[in-house]
Structures are given as structure tokens and as C-alpha cells.
Image (cartoon, rainbow, N blue to C red; front, side, top):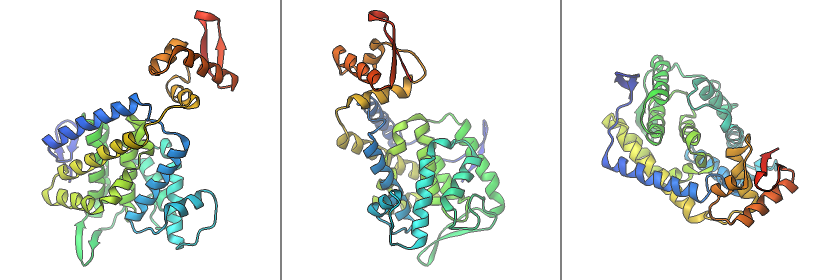
Length: 327
């Protein structure tokens, strides 16, 4: 629930607890380790596996029945026997996640565009903010009565203003946005999967590792705690419980990455990682060594020679004056 706030007009209510401070510090430490081990960009195979796990987990939370194997088959244009609605949901999610980098996390228009893709063929109002009143029913009880339809547009503007203008650390802001999105329930359907997707998008702008980090899998594995955190935040009028829950999910996702995907980088891995930050500039072997302190100078020379031979780099100059540029 968003309330008035002096500097940006509105700010969602939450408190920074010792647990939140400790979790942010622990996550920051993990992110440093991810960067040091060059795990921020995973190999193609692992990126594909984690993307499939993300899609399957996020949709299973919403009742989709397709397995990771069936989603893989759909990606490979193979026939899958399953309810048409479930297949449509998966196809939509594949399309959205493939275009994730094209969306700006601060753009309401992009948020609507993503929702339209995600819910195409599933609801008539895909991509449109709701104007009707809705409630979320769990069993025989109303678990959450969303703000009235005439308030939605203003509340969405408010939470995007908070995301763009507030000085809070991005880790916390992403969690706050996720909770507020679910509280507002801006669309008639698809809000859960959209909230999870948008938190990923927010995080990956500053931390590329989150693009293929399957947070949704851990949420699915702790689904009861996920809904409990949402409910507790609703009942207390504060996003604090949900922030603590989501930061814990982020921490455990990074911990799992460090435990299971610590690997020796190949020549191609190093060259492609280096390209991410040096694609448009000339550089020397010394610059390359600064990025990969764990390798020797001869190994760096062999890497660069391999990239030149494979048409990835253009070499100019000689000896100490040698420079390279990505083609």
C-alpha cells in the first residue's frame, strides 16, 4: 500500500530491519564472488537450462502442468501433448523471456507490452490495466482484496515513480516493487508471473547474473512462505516481511550458483566475457590480464591469438604497441 512521501510524492511503507541489512550485506558479498569467478555470464547450455527452469517454475506456481522436458520440446518446435492453455502460457513466456533485455524496468509502456505478450490468447485484456474491482480467492476465502479499479492507474504511476526516483538500494527496491505490484494487482490476470519477471528485469540492469538466475525455482520450492510473506505484508500494511523473504531467496540463489557452477573458464568463455565490457574499444594484452588475474601472460597471448584466428578480434601494431579490437 503506497503512502505520501516528501521527495517523490509517494513511497511504499517498509522498515529496514537488522535482518534486511544483514541480507543485503551477504548478497553483496555473494555478488562480489560471482564477479570474481566470472559467473555473471554463464555458458550457453546453463543459461538455457536455467531459463527453462525459470519458466517452468513461475508457471507451475500459477497452476501450469508442463514439465521442464515438455518446455524444452516446445523450444525445439517438437509436438507436446498437454492442455492448449498450458502450452499457450509456455509459448508466451518463452517469447517474453527471449526479449527481456529489450524492456526498460522503469517503463510502464514496456510493462504493458510484456504483459500483452505474456497473456496473449489467454485473456481479452492482455496489456491493459484493469478498471474493474477484483479479489484473490484461496479456497473459500478472499485472500486479498485489491485496490478498486479506478485507483490502479495512479498506484501504478506511484510505484514506478518510487522505482525510478528513490535512493534506496536496488536490491531492496526490486523486492518492494514486486510486493507493491502484487498488492495493486494491476491486471485482471497474470500478476504473479509479471511481478516475478519484473523483479528479475530490475535486478539484471545492475547485476547481469540475474538474467539467468532461476529465482522462480526457489520461490516455487518455498511457495507457502511466498504467499505467507505476501499475506503478512498485507496484514501489517508494510512490505518488510516480503522484502526479508525475497532477499533470502536471492541470497540462496546466489549461494547455489557459487556452489554448483564454479568452473574453469575456456578460452571462448574468457573472450566473450571480456567482450561484454570492451566491445567498442581498443585494448592491450595487459588490459586483458587485468580482467583475468588468474591466468598467465602466455595464456593471455594464446587467448588473443585464438580470437584473432577465429575472426573475433582484429590485431594492430607490433610487440609492446600491439592492440586489439572486437570485430
